Image 1 (cartoon, rainbow, N blue to C red):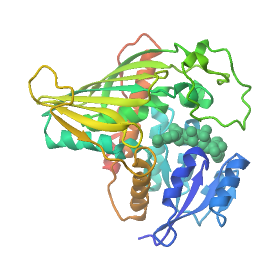
Image 2 (cartoon, rainbow, N blue to C red; image 1 turned 90 degrees about the vertical axis):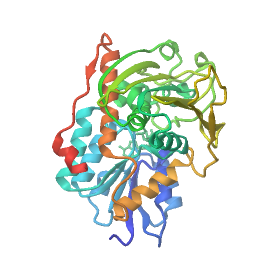
Image 3 (cartoon, rainbow, N blue to C red; image 1 turned 135 degrees about the vertical axis):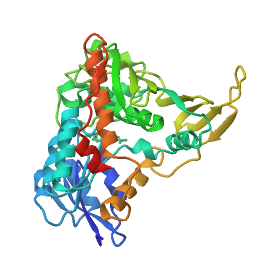
Image 4 (cartoon, rainbow, N blue to C red; image 1 turned 90 degrees about the horizontal axis):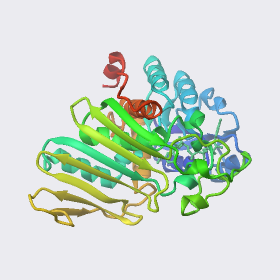
Length: 389
Ligand SMILES: NC(=O)c1ccc[n+]([C@@H]2O[C@H](COP(=O)([O-])OP(=O)(O)OC[C@H]3O[C@@H](n4cnc5c(N)ncnc54)[C@H](O)[C@@H]3O)[C@@H](O)[C@H]2O)c1
């Protein structure tokens, strides 16, 4: 049993705040180091953690004996290289989603974890959101019978602000927004339906943001990822010089248990939330709103054979939560710390599921960038499945 888990953080701004939940000196875990290429981000980090080691070279964290675990909270295209190097150095990792930019990249990370017998945890925090947990609980209770299909509509109201101002807009940095944004939803669909995609097809296009000529000069220290509330999308300015990721994607998936799923993602809706519906042999559930702290959230169940009941036959209002992402962030970090410390053996998220979400997203992207043909999702090595149980 680890007395006090010593934690390093790579990528200390923006998502870097996640690691603050792990800083509990005297209570089992402490942030002891930070790495970021931006001096301003490191300055802010030092204000919070004056005793921490800081560096602009993340590799220094891999080489230090006084670090047990590392949060990798950097842009997607850095995940694979950083994860593999840290696992090889024997560090447990919390890796933000999407796990990597390719299925092969995920498999390289999994193999490094297996070869070095080190713990890996991927930050699929939607599995800790109370709306999703309520839907999972209802499905597991059997109230909608055997699940046959699930549909997710993702209204990305902040698309122009969050995904077309910086590296997110560039295929070489994200591969596709079906990974960057969609990995969450593909994972939730897999989880709610109890299977993984085997066959996938998609249609998608860049329909709005490519028509905006106002681009910035890619100044490295610009602050992106800020919700400016610009609407309609044609009013966006100062977008990324490279824009080649689809802003509209429609995906169909067949899972290994026969369940059929759809996923739709649009990056220029006026509203910003996800809507899931899951249909079984005895009923249907659907969420309206996905963040109890922001606009409210309710899960409705229909299981009576009537024409239409607006409020559902039963309605579950999700209470407000403390913490970002609908209260999920403090909970997922607590579980990561407990897992690496050895206090718990199993977690709600798991690296195989994270790989399968990327694999489904890659297959959908391949399909929509060709002629929308069905693509087989590459299976995972049995030895890796067995290792992670
Ligand atoms: N799970 C969630 O809810 C959620 C939410 C937001 C972002 N994310 C994920 O978090 C990750 C980071 O996203 P972000 O929006 O914070 O990105 P970002 O572009 O703001 O970068 C995060 C930090 O990483 C630093 N960085 C970049 N290159 C680096 C390098 N080579 N070495 C060290 N530091 C480096 C940046 O300077 C920045 O401070 C992404 O993978 C994203 O998908 C997850």
